[in-house]
Image (tube, rainbow, N blue to C red):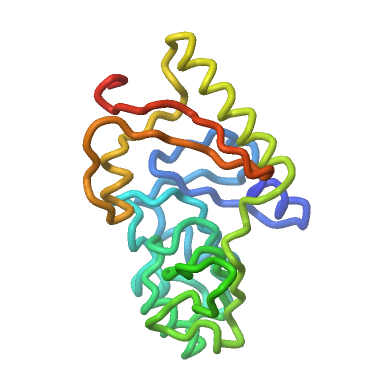
Length: 212
C-alpha cells in the first residue's frame, strides 16, 4: 500500500497489477488490473515497481518481452526477488540504454561471507559498472515500523499455535524449499525469526500436512 500511496503525493497516477485483478487497498490506485493486462499497463508506466513474492508464476516475469513493453525513459525498481527479473535481459537493456535506469535491491548472487566479501550482485553481468543502475544491499524492507510489525506478527503466531489455532500465512515448506533450490525436507521444519536485537524467536514447528 505504501508503494502506491507515497508516489500519489507527488501527483503520480497509480496502476496496480495483481494476479487476480483485485487489490486489498483499491482506494490507493487509479486502476487495478490483472497479470493478463500487463501489455496494457507496462507501456504507460514511467516507473515499474516490482514487489511480488517469488512464485513459479512470476519467476522470470520481467524478460525481454516485458522490457520491450517499457518506455525507453522508464525506470525499473525491484524490491522483490532477483529471480523475478531475467538478469541477462535487464543487463543488456541497461547496457544499450533500451531501458533508462534500474534500481535493484534484490541480488542474483549473495556473498557467502557477509561483510567480508566484495562479491557483486551478479557473477555473470557487471551491473556495478553501469552508470544507469543503482544497487542497494537488500535493505528496502527494513524500517522501524517494519521491524516492529514483524516482531508483533511472530509473537501473535506463536500464541495462535499454542492456543491450538491455525497460524496465519501458512506456507507449504516444500514449495518454499523448491523455489529456493534447496533439497526437499523430511519431517517437521522449525521456523524462526531473528529480530533486530539478535534474539531468536521460534515461530512454530511447521508441518504442511497438519494445516492442509
